[in-house]
Length: 274
Ligand code: SF4
Image (cartoon, rainbow, N blue to C red; front, side):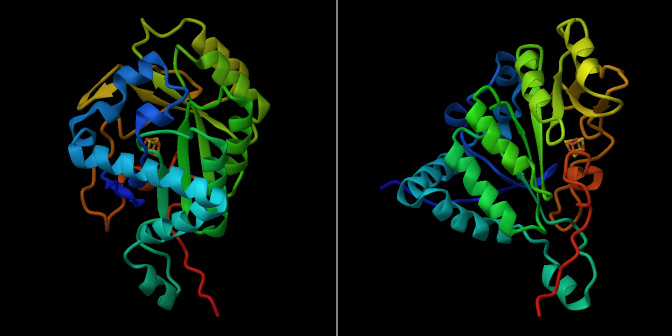
């Protein structure tokens, strides 16, 4: 009998994350991102991790087919609540901020593959305004899907990044140009010799200083030499400035750096309900 259920992953870089199988959901994957995806890594390829991603997708599809985005959103809400920091209750009593932010990265593996699924996250994220959400996506070629993701990325507690590389930067920049007020850009950065020579000049047309987060292609401790360019902000975790943090009660690299998170998400102030 097939199992159902939604489950988060807790990882030592981003903290809480929600994952789906790449094969079924990475509808805009490029050859480069497929080849260097960290989902290829040993930790993501265990039978348990693969089964979890398949179970998440099976459950997403079932809930969407039975009750649309609203039913899926109800179930996502309980998942989001599980990601509350451990000191949430104490913070709500004392009125102090939590030690770590309440945050969820959507898709440490996987991507948005259909509009109804995006809409479910929009409903859920709107109802959990104290939780910060962020995601990187390559699903921007389909205009309707892009418009739905734009709605999600427009929420104050959500930040969306269009993920580009030498293979897809033209379409990524076209999508970005439609809503530069909402979207940010993330570059999967190859070594300078192999990067398309048109990419950086194109970025210059659309962005300004330190606006584009850049991830030098990396495997383990090796990474491509970071390109120094005024519009790029190279991820400090890739460069080793932040160590992976195994303890969930402490800030993980992305929570400490917070460049990719929505503004004002370094801690969470708990509003006490009267
Ligand atoms: S730039 Fe900062 S927030 Fe973004 S992935 Fe790197 S460490 Fe995480």
